Image 1 (cartoon, rainbow over the protein chains, first blue to last red):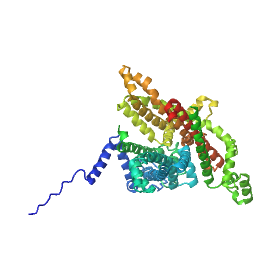
Image 2: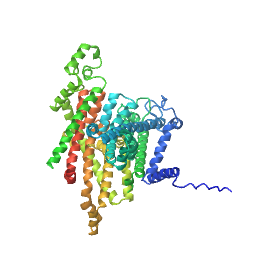
Image 3: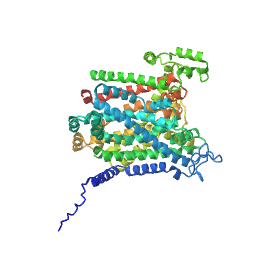
Image 4: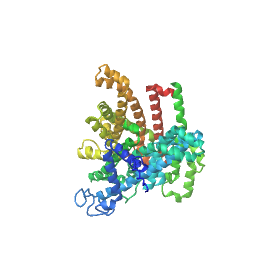
Length: 298
Length: 316
């Protein structure tokens, strides 16, 4: 008679379960922060709106109705129309695409550039560190919007150029953050052990140091996405960001400002949309910090 | 202290030089050039005049030579001539700097008037409904884009209630009342987000200090909570707040671009933005440089003030 051994019960410590429970624990911890649930809901809603903008918009955002120029809120244009008779609600919904794109891409660019600079400066040290840090210090001395304006003017108007400009403005933040983390991590035992085992500089940076500096980068990035949306909108407001006819909250507010006396309702939709989105992202950032940074929970 | 002061001041020099390099390069990278800006859009066809203007402005020389000549002139207070107004750039900056400085100071006053009481109450009664309202308002303040808030305030107080003029500027010398009427809405607009940043800092710093043993001792002596906060905790809690005020004031000089544009204030931020659109290269160079130097100087003053308030910094 053969004895069939029963398969061991799935233990809670198996990597798969542990991983899932880790994510759950993070989510649970994060949602304990004040407003984090609201932040997550708003962010998911904005992402859904951006992805399904064509589906959710009652009108084509670029179609002009010459019989309804600067129409106040009411049927069939529930939030009114702009100076060319375009539906404000549809343009606001489509504006979420530009906002999210601007926030994510510009902060993504800053994360990549800042992390590379910070890793290099912190790990190599010496003259390279001094030079890179002086340059980031100098860039950081420029008021953010002024630097973004100047870089935006050099690159020319357009969404991608505006995102590049905002990314450049945020790069010093990540460079300094990563450098500080690298300086504290590079002398730790596991890095010394990797070095003794023969790992070269790039491998040590990528495999051993980078994962250990990822948490503060994620926290900082989550905060800056909201800020990047405002800076990009500011550039569009001044005429250097998104160009017509692409709907963006910044350029819609520019129009609202021009027609302030004739149609004061124009600013409501794009302004409120930006406010709620940034508010949601800020709350989500707080939640993320609480979930990832044990000190934030204390 | 003198050694620290000297060392910290010397640290600024290389950064300042790099700031001038970046400013110079940025303006050089802009499309078109200063000669075109002076001659106007139709002049490139007139090649002789164009070349003569380039020579006159030194644009025919290699870039490093142009940079050092420009730096030498800037060090002597000569920022060049504005292509738009044809006045010396330095005069233009001198006329506009007080407007931005007044806006920055009024903004900080508004921010402190909101942040200090709300932050103190929030920290003294953590997790109470007052704290919840204050903290939520702070997060909301951080989320409001200043250009939208400006538009909303104009719509409400100027177009709606007719209480305040919507935009424009009168120098202080022409009447304090008129000046303040025109400056209060811009200061409120910029002050909302500043108040939010400061309020969060006041609350966090005070909460931290209230955990210290000496505060427990003060409570154990039987002092009322108000006295403990006012006399014992607040002084130490305000040290990081003072630092933040210094850093934020420097940043306000540049952050005022949008608000100055919305409220038609002839400040340095607006002149920087206008110079880009009017291709006024000399003015743009001057304005950016002055703004960056203002930030650097405010950071320096803040560091020195911080080392005075917290002597441990000097000995690190």
